[in-house]
Image (cartoon, rainbow, N blue to C red; front, side, top):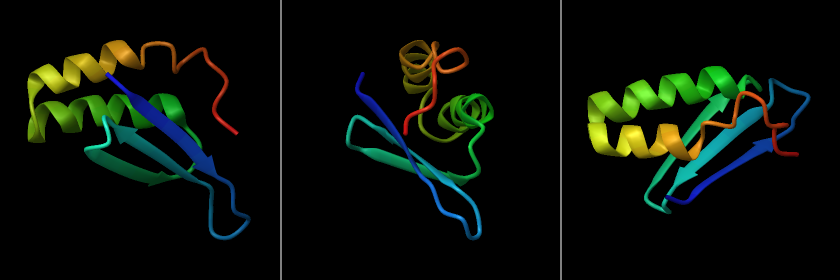
Length: 71
């Protein structure tokens, strides 16, 4: 599964995190807490799209907690 993430750093109002999944789904959130964003996306994907996609996303992003965030 291809997962892209990037951060748009802004002074006002806040930084914005972007996640793209397989060029099909795009999610954004204000802030810079990638671990929380990941947890919430796993739950959202399971509830709204599919449990399989949620599991694939969780596996593809399991290193987000320890990995440095994108610049």
